[in-house]
Length: 221
Image 1 (spheres, rainbow, N blue to C red):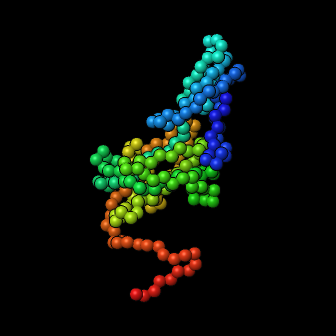
Image 2: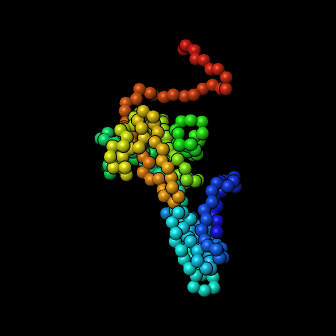
C-alpha cells in the first residue's frame, strides 16, 4: 500500500509504503487536527509491516479482513523566534515570542549551503507566540533563514548561537542570518530550530519604495 503526497497543483512529491505480500486497502484518510498526524483506516490480510520507515511493525490478521488504524507522523520543521532579553542565547519562560518574523525554509540538494542548487520552499510568518511550523515535503537537508519583522519601529540583532541546551538555544548564526544544515530522516520532526533576537535602537523613522521597473533617481527638495 502506497501513500503519496502531492502539492497543491497535483504534482507528485513523495510516497511511503506499508503492507505485506497479501491484500491491504484503505477506506478513509484524515489529518489529526492537533498532532497533524496522517490517520489511515482500512483492512488487511496476512502479515503486514505498518512502519513505512526502516523499522518493522508487523501485524497479522486473525481472519477475514481485519481492520487497521494507522497513524503516520508527517515530516516537519518548526521553531520559535523570541526576544532574548538577557542576551544569553537561551530561551527563558518570561521572554516573549516575536510575531511576524519570517522563516524562510530552504533545501540544499547537494549538502552545500549557498550554491546554485539551493531552493526556497516556503516563507512562514511567526504567530503571536513567535512560533512557526512547516510540513517538509521529503527527507532532505534543510536550513532556515530568519528575517526579523519590519515596520514595528524596532531594530533587531541576532543573539549568540548554540549557547547550550539545543531545545532552548538560538540556532541562527548571527553574521549570516541563517542556521546550519539539518538532515531530516523519515518521520522524525526537526523541532526547536529557533532564533533569538535582541532589540536595538534604530534611527529609522519611515521608508517607502517608489518608482517602477526602470532607473529611479532622487532629487533635492
